[in-house]
Length: 145
Image 1: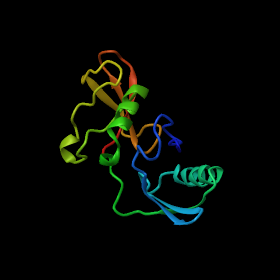
Image 2: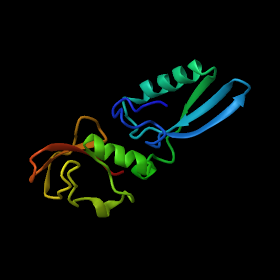
Image 3: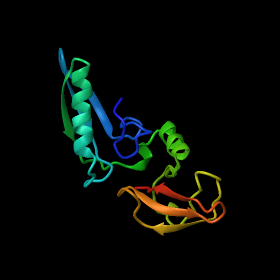
Image 4: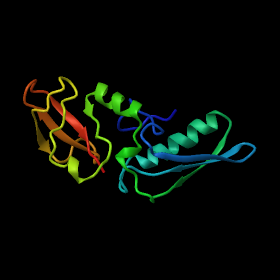
């Protein structure tokens, strides 16, 4: 399985980046991926990792990047959401629409909703920085989109 290079506790299938994988001939396949953001700097690494792991398993892989439909956090599996939480990143709620904007984000450590946004941008484009006002720990929130 190919881990996400920016969040190594989840893989690209759990993240919803892999849209389709199909066999195109006896030892060839095509993997279709969609970036979480159009400018995601990890996509080149992800493509290389897919080709490498497939080659190690005897497959010649072609990777196709598909921009539409646009990736959404709704494609995250429930397992990925729980892995994010355990890793210290608050996962987005399902249904990534505007009614989640401004809603308090739960601290992944203590579960408190008494939190504040520190920065709209975290360590990667898909995250924002928050702080829990109860346990005082900083944490990332994986933004809905």
